[in-house]
Image 1: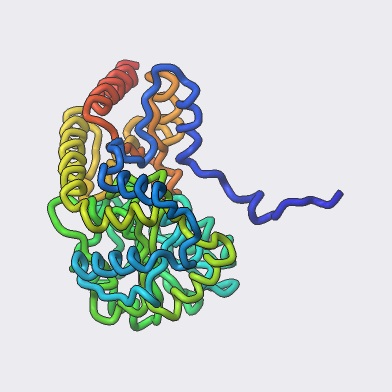
Image 2: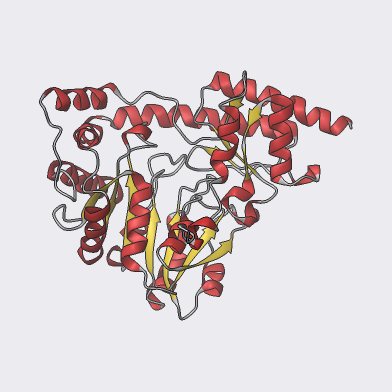
Length: 388
């Protein structure tokens, strides 16, 4: 029998995030700070709308691109929050989570051998999705001393005559870094000069602390060369509803919709009806959750400082990225020993790219009580390491 498997898929590494999560699920009394899933319930108005849609029998396919009512609400939201205007009929697509949006955007835009620049550390799906789409990932190792922001010099050094797309992921998973308006303005003229397109993953846009999120699509010359990917999982605590969206130029959205049509048909209908309520009613819920995350963020930074564990201040998302290089262990070794000794799971930084080596990703999408217990275990672990 011939080999039934694709070499490309077989050679692909599994997600480094899930490894420790799977171990913890079978370990009694273990705590996991490894998964980026809000601990809040989905706001009641959203759940109620989902229930009501089921009671009314709204269980049929929607159009491929999604409910027009929801696409209109998303376009109004993008204009209200980020000052970017889109046509809901031609420039918006509902997807099965933000992850599908990333996948279909890359497949719609890439020809074999074209290069995609990916600043790392980054979300684990970007490199595999580029490879599956036939593209060539070109990674940039971002620096802690730059607060993991992409600089013009780093971008310019990575561009070749084969470069087609830049993936931006701010607020960033795993670092919590952001790109402020001045940071984005520093690279925009280069992007336009080199005729590069941008896929901007803005799933954590509502979880920005101390300053508002700026979408690169809002800057002059960028709207028509940017696909914005976002969704409802993080800001609205709707991870299991599996609903995301993409907005961008009609030329690209049309081809993304074609792929979505053949692979998916449409995003979950119940989730779409519920998401209309999220767009319409949940500004205060989002603000309440953001304030709680900010409290947890500040708590962790204070504790790390007291432990002498270096950690730059994250300005977005719900992750911290402390440095553990002083202990002379790899991220994998440190995380494994911490798990075995104290039953606490975190994610090794190198799961998000080689430049994440020497760091850990710790999620604070958990209650303050859980975080306090986890910090106590980390303190004990570090004290034991220093006594050896």
